[in-house]
Length: 416
Image 1 (cartoon, rainbow, N blue to C red):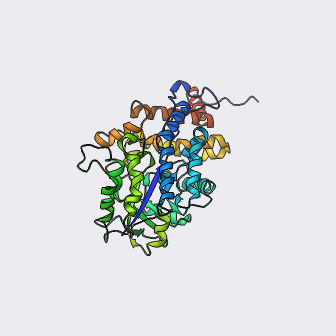
Image 2 (image 1 turned 180 degrees about the vertical axis):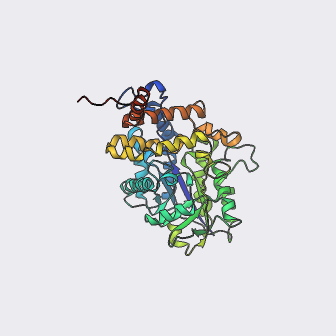
Image 3 (image 1 turned 120 degrees about the vertical axis):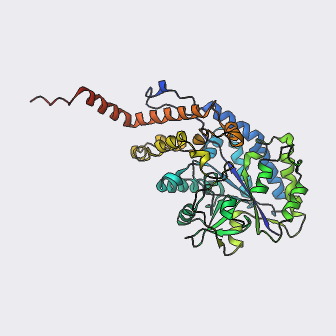
């Protein structure tokens, strides 16, 4: 029987406040973030998801005598906000870590698109996050999960170079070309790194379809799901169930039965003695030599297209990302720890996600997550913040000075 591998993404961005053009240059140390909204969202999700679901998982790990295992990827922006607004959540993650049945994955600290713009920034972001996970779990992460499962052969080679043994990716059909997402793979040019791919069908049955009463499989029960897992015997070595942690309690509220489903699922799967749960690092060690899987294009787990268009699909997004990453060298040159931290929080992928102009189903998902009235508002506030940051760095002041001199003619010569 294939192993069942649960991986949950825990992430909260720092949402921007409505920073207008009239705020640019007003103060040397402005606050760009909506502190009230961010605190309220973190506390709400903590109450509806993180705390109750952590309790469910802890109970099941003990009830199944350690046979139930899961993995988390927790972003630095989530850790910072939990520490400030819901420290009891971090305590509950400490309890999970203490069981030895939970793996914490590495990623980019601020959930950024740095792999697409700057390998130097990517290396800095992954190193910072590795230190956080060592502090949280007592161990260095050995498996990597890039922002929103953004993946390519190039990423795999870089991840191997910085010392990881495994990396997660989405099971994109056009990449797999008929192969199962339930096997271990290796990217071209990699010697040791194992790529594990998400099972899109079964993951999305939980993450997206659980509450859909027009779905032919509704209601989804733990015994039914366990039979689907069992039906893959002989066709997969692992069933990788990758999803947002907020699936449980936040995207699907408790009255939908999602928490009861999660609590019953380990027992339903383990009722078959040959079944087991595994973490990504378990699979990397156990599945043996991987066959080659080439992914020259950038893929992700977002939207129907499973590509980069969720964040970089229009000119607004591309422009915003470009100008933000162009500030890296002048920001780092300041040596100002607070300013550098602020800039890196502007790299969080959500800011560009909110600028999506997609319609239909994908557009509905983008609008669901966005704190703004429109993608254009998201772009305007972001660009106003970047303009203010440029002003603080002296970049726009220099430009303005040059323009003033060019309009008024040559600079006067100093007096003899």
